[in-house]
Length: 343
Image (cartoon, rainbow, N blue to C red; front, side, top):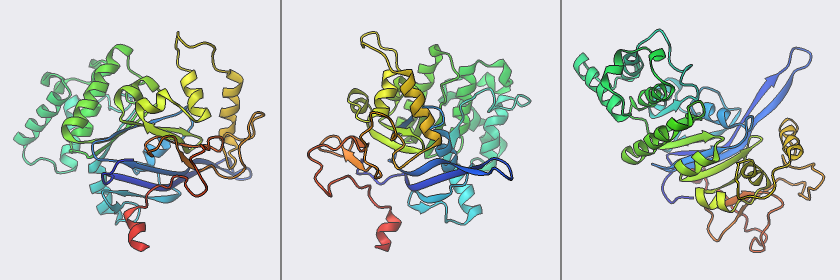
């Protein structure tokens, strides 16, 4: 954990969806009590398999989905309780989202200049036509694209160039937090590193925080300061990127790392075990990894344990209870400013 005041502080965020028809209606839990802090200028990678709840979390934070319960503070303000219209305008200016598909996120009937001009006008970021043109040129320079591309249509650009336009559009209103939902997964390997370097440079130069959602552990290690592992709508392990990947503690984290090709590693992951883990998403218990033949987990809800002497690397698993964790010494997340003032 960082000592800085978080730019984003999430506590107990839950989201459930209703499925089925009139006579067979049910509820599926997508998020189960998520707690997350992101410090100013920090890049946090959220990793996990498809269906683990990563994109749902991003959509809730972007206010594209309404959480079922929980709170999240942005720069000390409770966004869910703020006056809707005022909070929506200010919050959407400060928090921008980069979507996964650069082909679908840009309307093919408009030129590139339109995608940069629209957020500038909607959020009153510039005044006058001259300032508008200058702002669009500056944005193109930030993402290392020639100004001449402002007059092109999306189909005239490569996938990497389209994604850079999406990054420029997110930067148009000077955001303080960017939610990047697998922004490189649909790009060629040869251009991914360029987009990752671009996002890292922009965060360092402008102090922008980022939640980087990915299933690619290699890019998470390369880009992120901290990695959080998500399974079945809950966080199961987190820590500094190199520390977590070099010394994974949770069984699910180890399973994710075992799926990454490594010629120096002996053996391989068990596909049957992976299938059992994925089925557990639809039938979560007090422990989403419980119910396996070799499981010795407690039936109680797993608590957070510190892997090292400092709380930077933590794991949430009943199988991990180090000797140093005496009763009552399990990790507790800091309270939000609102909760502290009410105590």
